[in-house]
Amino acid sequence: MFQGIELFGDRHKKLRTAFSCGSPELDRYLKQQARQDIDRRACAVYVLLSDDERIAGFYTLTQDNIAADDIPQETIRQLNLPRYDRIGATLLGRLARDIAFKGQGVGELLLVDALKRSLQMSRHIASAAVIVDAKDSNAHRFYRGFGFIPFPESKDRLFLPMATIQQLYPEI
Image (cartoon, rainbow, N blue to C red; front, side, top):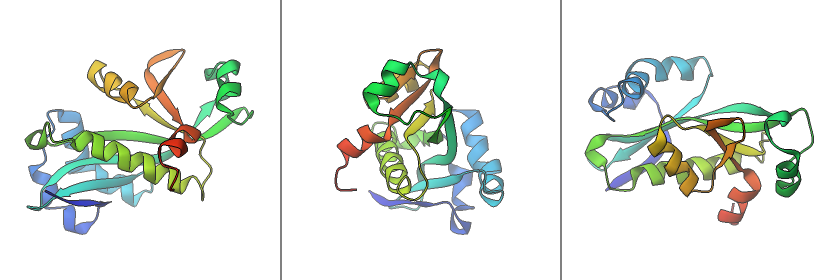
């Protein structure tokens, strides 16, 4: 059903024109801006290919940080996060699946891959959490279902500590 998830590259340029997730903003991003962001090293774009050579979904990763003031001190202690002014993190900036693959677990597959990849990379470039910005209530529920924690001052911004991801994937 799916070939796998790989970095967006030249072979995907023609494939992206057929992508449609129902969000004009995300469709436009993949079709017009993703390549530029990659070239500028603004983010890494990963695509899931179907067996019939379609882009079933994509996500982006980039480095970010969390202001320590944005997280209650009790949460920092509970999660054993570093006590710095800014805490290194990985931003899962965009995640979308083509509407043709709705109900096939593509969003979940993309998220799991992003979390695993973020955990692996945190060994090379320090990152204490994965951050997401939920674009709507459905996305918010989706991320909450995976254990993401809302920032107290922002209902749309959530994070998942790397220690939690490590517990989910101890083999990494």
